[in-house]
Image 1 (cartoon, one colour):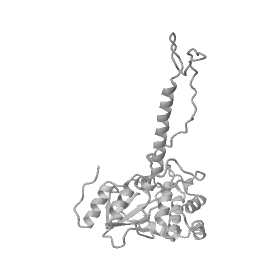
Image 2 (cartoon, one colour):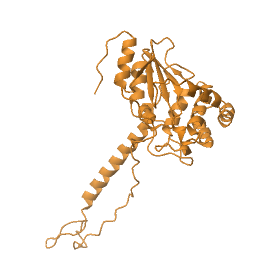
Image 3 (cartoon, helix red, strand yellow):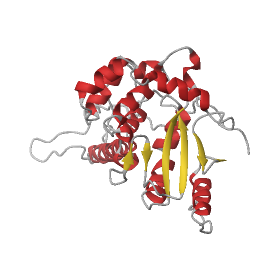
Image 4 (cartoon, helix red, strand yellow):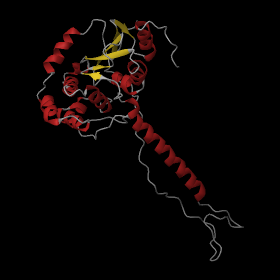
Length: 287
């Protein structure tokens, strides 16, 4: 099996934010002759064609452009993010389509029924761009809806701080914020908010302490305990200790281990491994 790639090299996969457009048209006036009684806009004279733009065509084109923009904005909102985020950027609400379903039972960093036959150990970094792709572009939603919600598997999250190798502590601080949320049994809520507000360049500016506090507030945390937990790094020692126990097979993020065996982090491979753990024949995946 090929080694997994670290998430520090990013391929831009997020949809681009549509550029704002003006609602005004700067078309030239018609050069057709105007009669005081019967003149109509853009009507062609019997002796000379108008050189001005056809207003009906302009209105039609304008309506099409507006429609395309509306569709693009809706799609962006569904994905839950559209642009890079930094310390001073507005927060992005996670898209409904890719949010962790509230109907799935959760305990701390474990998602799913405790007695599920398959355990998916998920190793991730909240700054990792490949983890963003796994989380926001459909794979996580398929796993949650088809494997976890059905009771076939549970997911256990593990922090693997691969991006902090750039000398910063933003991955660690984001992991600590998620652990602070786990203290309120809202880890997966914070998980979704962190990925929605991750920087596409993996910049540490997206996860300053001030911004992590703001994210937690928007995510509905009890700030009387969440903010001091974040600012004081209450779970940092625990997170750093976990880095010493990363399985040798895990060389990058995201990484998935199903019942002790490393599995490629695609839905097809995860489904096959979960089916095997449940004693079922692998089902063909949708292409």
